[in-house]
Image (spheres, rainbow, N blue to C red):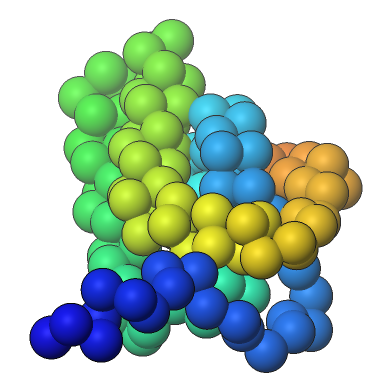
Length: 143
C-alpha cells in the first residue's frame, strides 16, 4: 500500500509509431463533419494513445447512436435547416465521449515530452469525406 504512494503517476511509455492528435482539436471536424468524422478521428487517435478495446468500442457505439439520432431528427424535420444543426450537435456529443477517454492518456503523453501531430489535413479530410458520406446516407434513407 505504501509503495503506491511513491510510484510516479506518469510512467515511461514506449515510443509511439505516430504521435496522437490533441483530443481538443477533434472538436472542429466533429462540428463540421458530424458524428462519423468525430468517430473516425477519435478511433484513430485512441489507437495512437493505446486505449483499451472497451473504450474504443464505447466511442464507436456513441457514434452509431449519434448518427441514428441524426437520422431520426433529420427525418422529423424533413431535411430542413435544423438537419445540419443536428449533425453538428451529434458530432459534438461524440467528441465529448472521445474527450472523456482520451484526455488523461494525452496528458500523460504530453507531460512525458511528446509532441502531438497536426490534425489540419486529416481533420479537413474527415470533415469533408465523412460529411459527404453522411449526406449520401441521409439522402438515401430519409429523403
